[in-house]
Amino acid sequence: MAVDSSEYLLLTPVNAPIEIFAWEVDEEDDEDETLVDIEDDELDEVFDTAKAVLAEQDLMLHRTALTLTASGNLPDALEDDIITLDISEGGEEDDLTSEQFQLLTNFYYEEQEYAICTPFEPLLFFARMSAAGQPELLSPDEFRIVRSQLEDQLFDDLE
Image 1 (tube, rainbow, N blue to C red):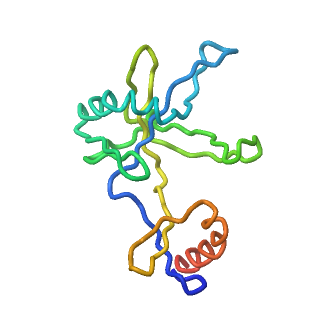
Image 2 (cartoon, rainbow, N blue to C red):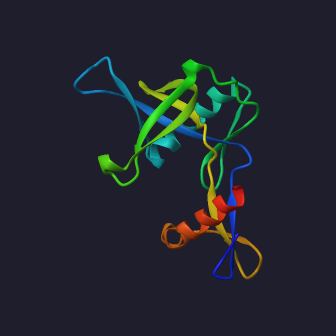
Image 3 (cartoon, rainbow, N blue to C red):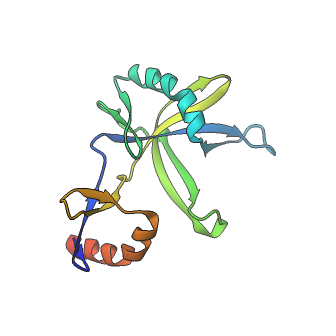
């Protein structure tokens, strides 16, 4: 895709993207649990355990540049393995979007339960070709500037 004489690319990881969430008990209802994102330092702590748990499913967990990924054959998604999460994009209730994930497994680390999931929707990254012919990821600010033009071209190409 080209916008304003710059060439843009749409990239996706080679392997399956992986998300690790923590199960959190609802303060008002002990029976209700929700999945919450974990911080990088917590991810560092649980990574080796998550890697071992996925290895039991013949999946290899990798730290890649922008996301965790897993190589190997993902199991077929069963109805009970599908989780829908409402995700706030701007911290506002009005900015909620739903994303579906396949739950691969749960595990415990120091009495905290975690879930390892892969998204159903492909994980996409926009990049620009540099003058040296190398792809460079767009910063969030750069993406906001050209987003509508890129999306228009992408959807035009799909028609």
